[in-house]
Length: 216
Length: 148
Picture 1 (tube, each protein chain N blue to C red):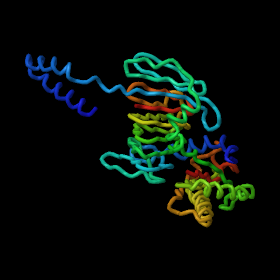
Picture 2: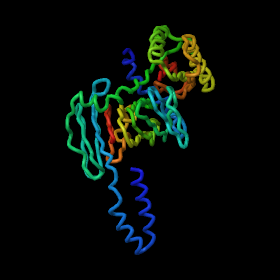
Picture 3: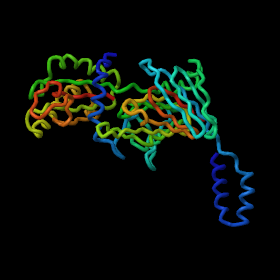
Picture 4: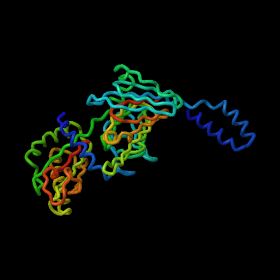
């Protein structure tokens, strides 16, 4: 394929030479192989939750919508319209795409832990959630954990930035105590700037006093 | 899994923290699965795809005959490649608060499994997979592509 492309380049370069160039072009036209047709296949399958979505396959000559389980369309070349949907068997799909499906990562897991008013102490409910957080971190072989602290809008912006930093560090310490390598912990503090529940300034809102954990 | 009740909150969680950090060289995801020969090409540099390696906009992901690779992007999009495959994450924009949403993946060969994430959820025409012969518009959620 590469050599084909190179000879095509040479032919284009020779165009500069007027009549001679035209003759060369004519000879090139017969010697250059047609572009390699990058035939493609597109296939919709149920997502890990069992839902079937929709994709649209389009090129300059046509469009096909795929929205039924195991519906596939193939496209022979950029000049051929996508084929009408055909339904593939599970076994065919496994055979063609099994290796890609086997490498599919799980989605990140997310948790929210809540805190007592003006404190870096967890609420009792969130305290009870900790074992599940730890288990998830462990079971997934977490590669990166983002820990972001937040506050409600009581107090100054600066104070709240510090408070939510303390909250995030508290959670990071809890994770580290469970054996999590601190190198994979991304600690951040958003203070009162990222409210989960939108409120005005100086409003007590327990749901905004939180740390958000994302386990990658 | 017990993570399911968190799904409703997950969206909010995703919208907020990552809004500010989308840019040319900011991490947009990470390598979560790797096997055999698998590399990430960033400009002139080619890095072995180790677990946890950050993925950036513009990166080219490549696998050899014995290779596989799976990555998770910041919006929860999940991409995985079988052997002899190559894709480029051409564009990744995830700043929902500003309405900046885009994901363009160019695939030149091999097989790929794709599970769309929050970009597709929030915008119906923001996610696109391009192959040499056609373009896929992605509403969601899971689909497969093979380029010969």
